[in-house]
Length: 640
Image (cartoon, rainbow, N blue to C red; front, side, top):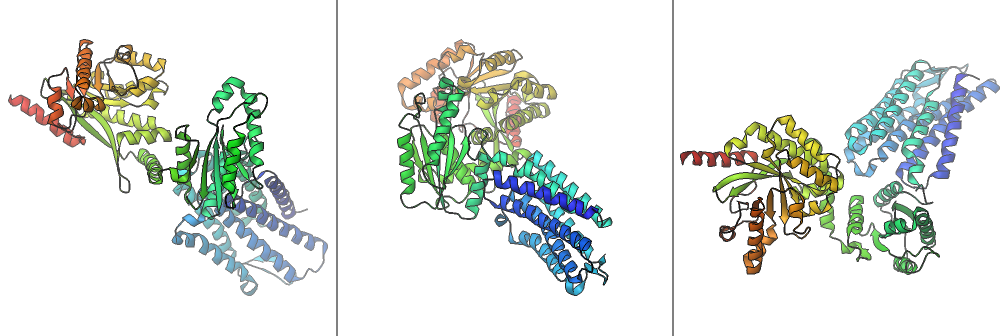
């Protein structure tokens, strides 16, 4: 047996194993799976062609030249198709071919079509290969064009990897780079040593790597239940929406499953879920079940008949109203139904609706697409994507809201906020930015960016020399859950060598209500360094009066809603006045916000209010404008 047969037989055996396991485990029909199986089968045909040719030459004397030419033609056509299919497969894992512009489609398709036509013309031109009358194979100069085509499509794969790098995980990037490396090595080897027909075998090895680490059927199956996973759900939805397949999706949420697991145990919970899955599978023939999360299932129902989805929903509600067994008494269920792509055509919008449903109150037991504000969800998804790109490129503005002292009649502090402008979305403000950063898991990165910029500003501009007492920075709820967060903030102050007394950390009532005991202890330690701690939004209703003396607050900031109530209600005004007086007697500095006109300013003038902020004084300012304000006040003070 020569090298050609050995490598080709190995390629066929590997391909057969991959196809067998693909048929056994793959349950997701989409473009990615289609390209993958075509890739493997096409490479197996190429290898089989080599084996047949080797057998014919070995056991038949005087083989007709036309048979040899046909086998070589099949080899070249299928062999070149492999690299094209490889590109389409890897590209389909991140994007649909329909999503890219027409010009890009031409860049992808035209070179491949040209080279395939060039190969097909070989019987006339003999530009790629030919056989001498005695049956000896020879390469012609045109074979270089075929290898250039190989390199071209490998280059396209590398370009896609770089251009869409955010869509590739680190593992996927490394796998693609390994495959490109193996492909290039085998191409060079076969170019210079034709008798080592290693490319088919190497492509089979690459296909096996793809099958195990990217195609990976195990990732598409739930490890506990015999249903498809959330990864499979996302792939199926993308494929179905892009191909405009008509189907309904019913999401089933078991909101109290966590409570059931804690009371009954994990084994009982698993048995309950198996019973639920079995019931869902009986609702309709050819129903596809996905497990999105622990107690969240999605049902894909293709081409439903009129009234069929209503009947399915009714059956689910009725079944959850009965016990699942002697011990499984779980009954709570919430249901979302969507007609796709009639009501939604975009996968991100569909995900937004599902997320909004999961976060909606438990009383909303049955909801439809029409129950959601799609424009708001669309904006939310756009902000999330824009925010991720903005954080990576640090395209934010730091804004400063001056804080006015009634006693000194000048600006003595400022609150630091974040602002981002997008040409399509407009201005995205601090609260909205952090809300989406928390959802995307980037809240710490964003928070540390703000804190670091504030420390830099103090170091470079010296606001303390211009009469400012502190700059206030908000600590958001998610930050309180981070390990050693205050140590990381202190490291930023040490890096710039600033006085801790120039920093005031603002904690809202809600933040305090969700903070862990360890965080509260850390706040006490950080306060000892000189950093001021402000309880803001006081009066919003998340904490009681005890929160004032449970933590070492040095500043008490009254919520805007309290100011509004005090303006119109005498009792509310008395309550506010007493609160400010109490805080001052506790040696706390007092602050109010929302002073937007002279009426509010006059109301607080006779109260125990040290600091105030609002549009009556200044709005949010960029750094340059803020510096002008405090420098101007310093100059005015000097003239006095």
